[in-house]
Image 1: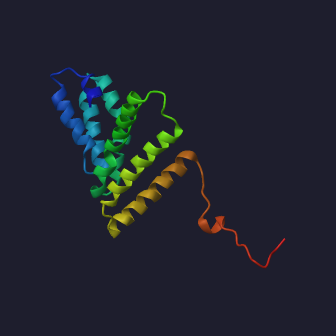
Image 2: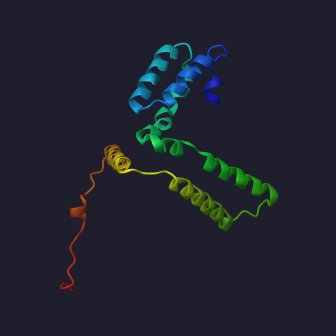
Length: 167
């Protein structure tokens, strides 16, 4: 949001901020896109740089809206990564030039362990499990369309091996 504030005059910032936050925190991706289109229509001509900045990574900013509502906050926050970077900077100040591969791997393992503990507290119902499966299939289809791959089905990919056929 700070990068948007830098591109707008102070008198126009409060209204733009409210509308941008509404788009980022919309209940669904379709509503978020509609709200973003409204921002572009209203501010596009007079604040081109701010609107370009707003739309630059908009799809990435609303990616968490695909997931079940109960999971969105855990997905959206980056506190774990930010804490890892702060810890790395703190350790580099204390012991400069002594931050090798083993120490980095230890930090990463600690961060992943903390993330796993945080995710254990997120309950996944059967309905949410089905939603996540549908999201996975949707993402696979988008990837295939983007890359142009046609993946073989699991039945075609498996070859039968018999213990009777020996070479």
